Length: 457
View 1 (cartoon, one colour):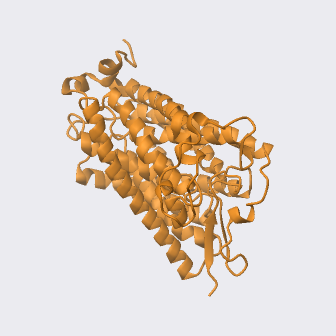
View 2 (spheres, one colour):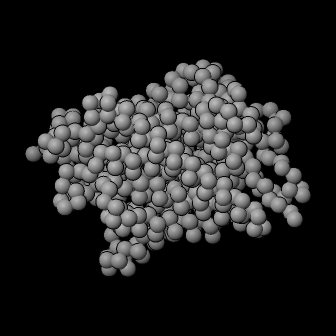
View 3 (spheres, rainbow, N blue to C red):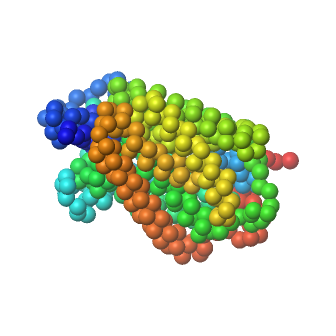
């Protein structure tokens, strides 16, 4: 029987023209061939079109954090805590930017010494120290068809926004010092290893498993969402939750932030092609389709449940669809994007509206409900719709890829949950407790942590 084989080269590497760019082809034509193998001897040449697009994409992803995610979370906070969310997002960007420069890029992507395809060793989980302080990342060094400096910058924006997503789960109750230390530790021991395992190329654990991970379903969204859930459980609920109503203080901020996230997501998803090519074009279309069907799915669920669709529901539906399509956008077609966006929205709606209430955890702004659940749904459905979109109709190919996706999701959930719990315990010990006092929480973190007010009389 003719089988279909999924392969990809390292993200943005010289041997592969696109990050996450897997090829799906008939084994009878290219038995076991990969994009990286086909281009292994091609000299690296800078492409001005690819470089221009990655310059724009890097700025778009940065915009997702400041001001996108900052406004989205800040609007949902209570008046007394809005500045604390803004400050946390800005500070996380600063801490992770420094960390990435010193050792993050080297451990995640920069040094692949010791990696061997099909061999599990230390370097299947983490890179090396060959590019500490971005050593060797000069004006003339290339990653594929773009400057390596630009690739390092693009990946830096991913590393910055991922721990900031977690902040939505423990909002309004964690110490600022704990936020900064935890973000640094979590990026070092959770984000960087998973990015290396999935995206660093042959020899990476998840890469060798055959995971389809275009732009961050596991590395970003499941990773951050699960960490958010663990953090919410470790800290406990906010004072008065759930008896006391805690409505968003400014939904206009939240919707403006969601709109910026939506626009920036094209840098996040489409930029992950690391090229201005046909795969980037399809990723643009599938990203938009998933966001659209995510909105409709969420509003429909709200309409049926309460009789009134909401503005916050429309924003949440768009983000749920965008999260769901993130791992799949470069692999699936329009019909797959339509289903993924719709199913992701319904799944996230259920997680936030029913599961959260039933289990009683206080995920303040639903980091797990949106990113964790949406990432899980999108990553698994990628294993269904990617083979179908590329012609892999054989049951063996579809079942095999689906199992790879499920196995990768389970690994990510287990690894992140255990590591996050340990890192929170360490952070609590080093900062004399994770949480502000009951009195400080009552007054609000803006005044007690930063001596400022968002709104002065």
